[in-house]
Image (cartoon, rainbow, N blue to C red):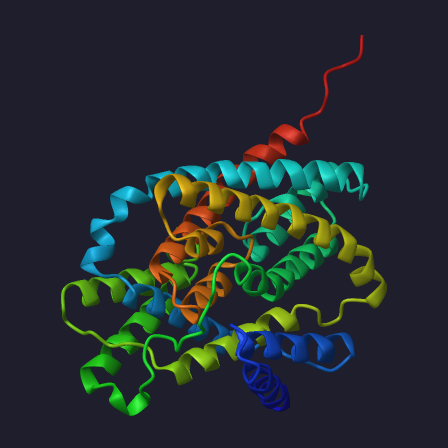
Length: 341
């Protein structure tokens, strides 16, 4: 409870500055500082599952008939997403190998812009440095949360907006609450049972999108819920540094900064290129290509009033591509060389 209160206060203080993601950034900084300081910060397991399902709920609520009509035009950005991920991986892999001195398996898994849990699991299976992979990916997500809102403000003027509605919880009707509960419960049940990327997010997103498109409900997520979700995501990111020795953290900091710099550079360059050729929103494209997590980038999109469904679906494809290609890449990279003649 003390961790939640401290994170909420930190989030509130940073939100007063008016910067996007203030609740998340403040919560993350407070929790990370407490974790590194030796405080016992427990990851809110079940609550985080509900939060992740709520992210899917928010993504689905952003689907409209106009959005579906424009889906056919997304092939350009989705095609470039594959190119961007390839460039991100290759650049980061060779940098980690030649500059940071990582072994092949560890460099590959640290360079792969996939989900942190999946990359850590693969590191255990492939004999990579599991702790280093976990730290680098935790730092990657934390740095992305800190840097991307600032960098995005350099290419356009951003006016932070409320989540999707400035109304409170009392504005939701009983039927709205029913669908909210159904969506979240479906996400919780899907975890570990449905074979797809991030089912705890994707399943609620699909159901929420369906009921909105069918007109069965038109609920919008109140700003108060979005702020609470940001606080818990901040706790989740910051709490990943619990038990990490300062020496290990500092040792991985340079490698993580290098990975983030390369991957954000590719994301921004690609977003501006695609925006110029297709006329798409460059901010939405940056968030779609950015090397952050699905939940984190979706919340940033929500916070700055961009197309949440567009950003969220691109990150679902990113995770799917990373999970599909990572084992193949590792198998190829770690393949023993033939016998010397």
